[in-house]
Image (tube, rainbow, N blue to C red; front, side, top):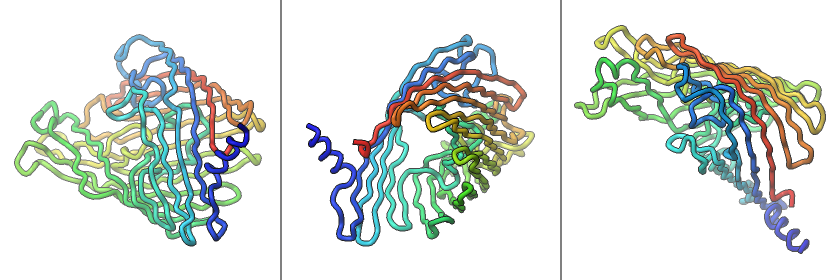
Length: 392
């Protein structure tokens, strides 16, 4: 029996060797994670097992009375990645899913695609992290969604990386996704407001430069995008218009005490909400009356400041604060999102290599355009069991 397991592990992890001694590798990996959230307030029930400030109500009792107990396993993940030598280079592929339904599946425990891409030489194609984001800004936390003020989007793209090493540079064409707010137009001219839709005629252009050093890393990401709208059911789809969206994201990890790190990021731009982890819209109406309205790419600022500390090889903590804030247009409704805040502190314990358990305290708050305010306080206890074919 042991020999059978040894043979299976060999097939999954090392495979056959090419003539240039570069191995074929296939890894099956993932984890099962169970979360118990005790919410002392109340959020949108479709999002109650994670904390998104934009889903916090600013009206008392909007989603029911305070206090909810949530137990789920939606963070659980499964993935396959492989490396195949081809001539003097390797082809790398990755496919990964979790069970956290979003979009039309929000609130459901169902398959959600995270990564599906291939990479050969300088070219990458498929769905993975946007070049506009820095995945290393995500702190060592157990809440699924994470800090509101960071750029975070896994996006279909075609990427070219001419520079690799201690200094990396990449450019990409990414899938456009415009979030349009009709604002008060629905009230004063419903024939327009109810029929507005995004007009995504061009891909988004993103770029990233990253310096990796002994002390940590420094990264800048940029984006240029066309944000458009049109009106269905009317001649020539008028009114219609478009604006230029742009953004700059600056981030860093700074190492301390060998294992600790300080995480900092700041992003600013106009029409970049689709790329943010939480809060805001890309395009909204600006003006004082219907005849004078024009579309405006909504300005947005996001910040993240976290510190990851490792007490020893088995115990760690993370503490920090994050915020997203938008400069609302004059014709957005009073209930439109204006500011989201997020803070957390935790203690995590890894008794053995593939097991983690921990507790986290979280606070979030939402402020609307008209000043209405709501907050949420919760605790989360999680158990995580990881696996990899490399461990067999």
